[in-house]
Image 1 (cartoon, rainbow, N blue to C red):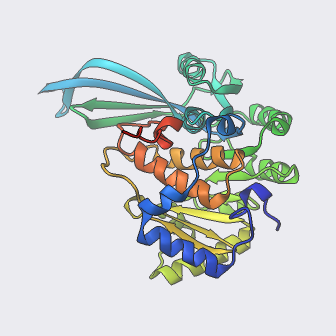
Image 2: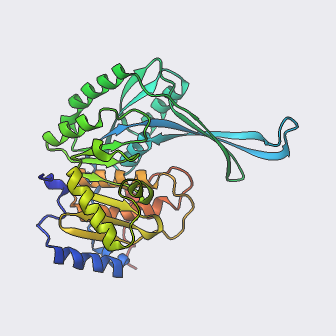
Image 3: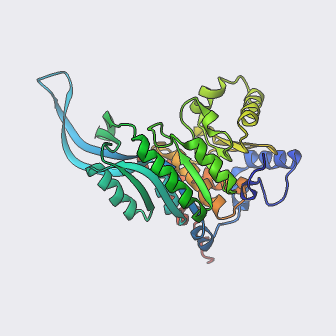
Length: 352
């Protein structure tokens, strides 16, 4: 299977020995390696067009104080003082793409209800081009979190699978939107929005578009032919089993990539950084976080940064290094957050 040119490992072919040397340099001195990665200028990022498709949800937070236990049951009584709504799922991915200065389009299904309208409002505030299919029978997915003193006490989920007819309409819209985008990003949260993911991958690859997938579950056959897949350790373990060593991991990933015709796999490893597997070899990037407050949504930031960079024509290895730096920034923030291009590429200090 031929991989798209913009997703090649670099501008020129790289041998295994060259890639190994790059890996050693990155592992030995991550800070120095990152300084060698060129800054991606704002006009270049602004030209990047990413189409995000997947399951969206509203992350709703209720913050309050607990001062007593309920007389009705041995549970705390929360006096809610403040509420906050944030984009979740694929909507948060699209928000991350937009925050970097790239053009983000979002294709998804939401209901005709208050949470659906709130998602539309938040997408507008985030400068995301929303291409929504509305399902009157679908309650928009909500994850309601109740917190007190920065501690989550309870999470309540409201969700239902979209209707078949609405998903088919979304597939038709996908084929219409595809020519106007450089990269396709499929964000799977197993809520039913990517029922036709295999057809979408086939259509995008036939059009020469790179396809990035944030996977869910143990059935990865449906992602066959994707350009790049970005599992975390738990997600990969669910598919290939537990590995006994790095060599064992490499062998299992190589076999998986070959069986599913994947150009690349980027394993996100939390405090251990991330590892890229391609035909050219393996590249490891150590974690860059200085302080970790919240890892929720870090995976969204990683794949959004990759997509934005690839759409801007950045070679894959450079895109991975930028994504690693973005992850190091976002985990220092509370909740599902974003990274701006100014944070990722700060201006150099003025000379005295």
